[in-house]
View 1 (cartoon, one colour):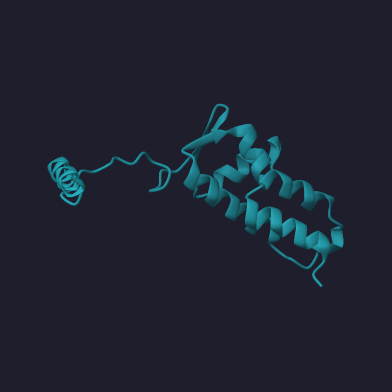
View 2: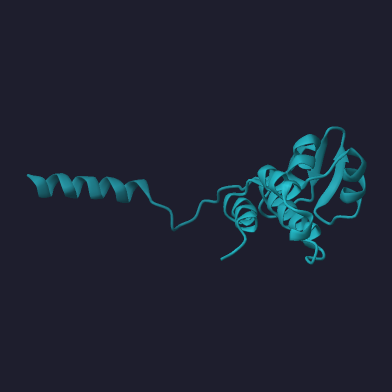
Amino acid sequence: NPNPILRDIFMLFNYSGKFLEFWEEYIGAPETLFSQASGFVEAVRVFILATLSETFKNISKEAFMQHLGLNDSSVVAFCASNKYIEKIDGDNVVFVANEENQKKIKKNSDDNYRVDEGLRLVEFLRSAGE
């Protein structure tokens, strides 16, 4: 059987995206639980950061620190050394632009539904029902 603490931690992290709760569980876990997992925290932060950068163009610095388990003294160095972060702008962390965090312009295409075809369909259905 898997360790129930590990199960709970990974459920929060992997399945629900509850990053704040993940850090609370991680901090509350016995030290020995992750002592053999070299680089675990860094890997978790990279995953969370990639998720945030695909979701937001920017985020408040406070929320960013909470999601990543950082504090005031570590956030600047973390952001400076990370490819997902463009800059810290006052109280906001700005992510590097990517395909997912930018507005998408809806393109018109010839494959779109045409009104005249819809009107013909409505007319056909009316005549078939008579």
